[in-house]
Image (cartoon, rainbow, N blue to C red; front, side, top):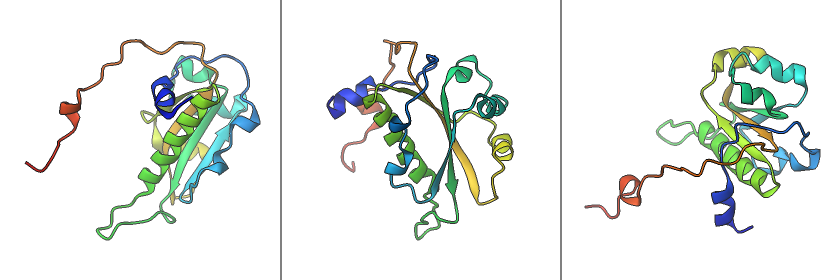
Length: 161
């Protein structure tokens, strides 16, 4: 699959098959994620604890839920103080979502969850922040054919004038 085919095939999956995800298809250590730590939740009892922070029926179907955390003590800060931890985590998540498509898996990147409660459930130290949740599994729903995309002129400025 070409990169463009890969990016077009990727969608937010909100319905999963019961099939387990093979261990060789989950290789978060292959990504360069120095300030990022992943919690890989596969056991039903572990995932059930997270339903409190994001209570959607389709979320409960996902065979794997990743909690992507950023360690602000390890992230790079720009000269003006801008912490790049969230950016580094977003790069990891983006690469994982695209790699999942290549492996025949579906994902959904979740940010609308109770971050403080998730932090408590995972028992994280103060330097770690749960940046996003990512569900992974074999989709049982097809992507919506109605993707509403902005035109290039709506999100890009060409030149300085």
